[in-house]
Amino acid sequence: MRITVLAGGIGGARFTRGLLHHLRASAGTAATEVTVVGNTGDDIRVFGLQVCPDLDSLMYTLGGGISEERGWGREDETFVVKEELAAYGVQPTWFGLGDRDTATHLVRTQMLAAGYPLSAVTAALCARWEPGVELLPMTDERVETHVVVDGDEPGTHRALHFQEWWIRHRAALPAREFVLVGVDDARPGPGVLEAIRDADVVLLPPSNPVVSIGTILQVPGVREAVASTAAPVVGVSPIVGGAPVRGMADACLAAIGVATTAEAVARHYGARRPVVGEPDSGLLDGWLVHDGADADAVAPLEALGIAARAVPLLMTDLEATAAMAAAALDLASVVRR
Ligand code: GDP
Ligand code: CA
Image 1 (cartoon, rainbow, N blue to C red):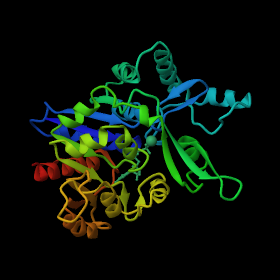
Image 2: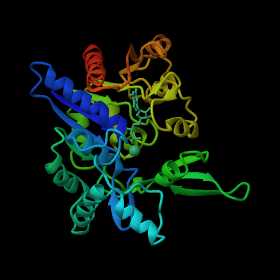
Image 3: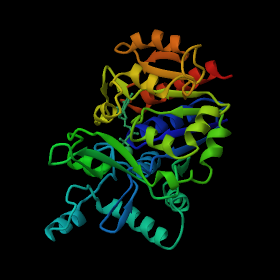
């Protein structure tokens, strides 16, 4: 069996870790291959280093090197380089550059400068971390999510890098638009379209629907691949009880006019096999919402043609996360064509 996951950072990584735990625990699934297509729209060049936050969150989480406390970066991290850079007055001071993490960025930047594509660099980094999945950048081309916000003068706008908006401003500047710079010329990374086309199940983990999964879907050809794969496509809501479980996805959803509810996010992705009269451009066969708070979303989504289930969706520990992944696979087996 081949499972393909389109993932951002923390939400995608934690869910995939639960998925692997479930697969290892359940008999007869030793032959399952998991491919993760990672968002690279968050990538940023700082101090000459090419940083790929979501690929690193995936690699460290699945490889056992993540800081569980912070959710990003390495465990047992120190920040001496960051402090020394700040002492020189060098910008940006808001970017969390850990010392251990810096080694990853140095290897990546050096390999990119030598001409290796990001996919090859990622494979080389993963040779150390052994994440247990094939980790594919969504594209080898450099693309960057920028955020359009209001300028100082009324009626004007300015754009800043997603990381500056997210980390420095804590997503507090109202976003007018997200622009994925470079995407028009980007091609899906090697293996990305095949992984979606040839999958037995495609999973959308509880990653940010706008700046993680939404970004991956913008790479030319990817949305079409998901819409047309023979595999069932099942998503897991990152929104629980009208709020993101972690982070500021509500600020991203507001910018694209989508309400911060499990139901609105599913409607935004859309039904793949819509009922008569609905537009047919959707992506989802199935959608999991949080049991209790969001159970009311099940009936309206089913009416739209999305098979919906209410199950516990809090990734409090590995077992709870594995149960979420099991529920997603179970729903996939129900909607399999
Ligand atoms: P990022 O790139 O590090 O921001 O991570 P992702 O885009 O992969 O995931 C971010 C999303 O994960 C946020 O919108 C959170 O709401 C969601 N999330 C985090 N923890 C949980 C959880 O325990 N349950 C659910 N359902 N969603 C979660
Ligand atoms: Ca991210």
